[in-house]
Amino acid sequence: MVIGLFGLIRLKTEIDHSEIRMSFNPFIKKKIKLKDVKTMEVVNYGFVGGWGIRLWTKYGTVYNIKGNKGLSITLKNGNKFIIGTQKETELKSVLKTLNL
Image (cartoon, rainbow, N blue to C red; front, side, top):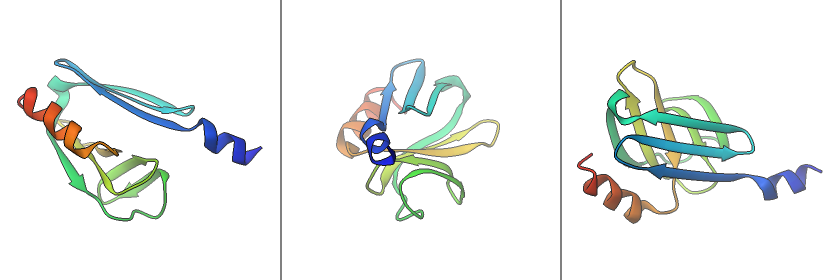
């Protein structure tokens, strides 16, 4: 049963001119308006104690499936989190295209 659940877990991120959409299926879906973002950058966050959803790290909440690269986001209200990525180059390109 638990092994089957691991096969269902997916982390998907979409970014456009108005928002970031993140789904960590089957658990969480988030939409973040770009107007609410203070800073955003691709970082190497190292090892944060495993994969999945990691709470209370120095980066805030970390959502990752594997690896150690992600989009670090700090909101204007002070909340911080990271969305993991396996597509670092593509993510940097999208941020550059959007002037972020």
